[in-house]
Amino acid sequence: MYLDTASSEPLHPAAREAFLAALDRGYADPRRLHASARDARLILDNAREAVAEALGVRRDEVSFTSSGTDAVHRGLLGLTRPGAEVAHAAVEHSAVLHALAWRDAPARQLRVDRQGRVDLSDLGATEVVALQHANHEVGTIQPVAEVRDRTVFMDACASMGRLPLPEGWSVAAGSAHKWGGPAGVGVLLVRKGSPWRNPFPADDRVDERVSGFEDVPAVLAAAAALQAVVAERDEVNARQHALVDRIRAAVAQIPDTEVVGDPVDRLPHLVTCSFLYVDGEAIVDALNRRGFEVASGSACTASTLEPSHVLAAMGALTHGNIRVSLTRGATEADVDAFCAAVPEVVAELRRDAGL
Image 1 (cartoon, one colour):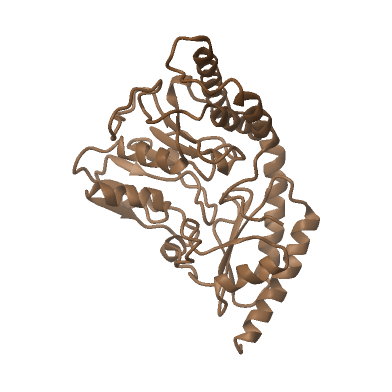
Image 2 (tube, rainbow, N blue to C red; image 1 turned 90 degrees about the horizontal axis):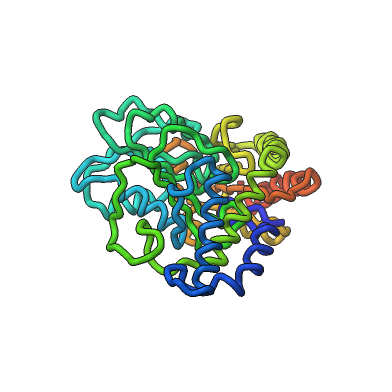
């Protein structure tokens, strides 16, 4: 049972169909004037129109990048002036933190509460704020609209397609493989009139905001998946929200366990739990042997299971944690099976540790 869609969602059937259909028509350079190039350009333009419609933005505000990380870097760095301070929540994704470190300029870290929601009282005079729409590890939704008096970069990689975009942002980033599109496609949204400038060397592409040759079939597949996900969002979200509530309630019954993140104002499909006296890697391995695939450690350093800076900023347990994120097709039977396995796994690991 795959329970790690916050890392990458399985390919949506709509994406597969669109990708295969575009393979034979989307190979040419969209900048050229011959017939094959015009086919590729038409596919690219249609994909941009579909994404704009699904997200409620203008078509000329949509760009396709090589990944969500690329969209984050371009989006954030393009809003900042040399040497100017940028404020960011302490729980931002590492892609944001790495971009700010590379920039080598002042950064103001904003505290979060026990649920992972940012405290905006310390913004000061900072003009640019980096604030994710929803946290990638614990699911808590951030008050982006409350910062509308600043220039806001919004990392929406965890939420794009799953939730309607809030108001108040100037530039936003998304990642197609998080909503069921193919990997290798990011979405950069730049609001008309925002002070964004390309922070990297220019490239003579169709879209001056990005670099490199567009993967036209993959872009169309990403757009098709996004349209499908948005169309089914209300039904899927309601079902997933109820299933995650079941997981939260069941795991909370295990002694010395903390269920983190806002229980209500959150991503519908995701929950993180921390278990005292248990190693996160051991939980992942034990659950995997029982057929349940979950994540542990920081969402972006799960291969090394380093302590999560998100949980640390929240004041939550930073060891023995697992992140569970549901597929579109997850059922009550799937969740009940998982909820039955977790207490047994935790008890076994604690017993083996002599606790």
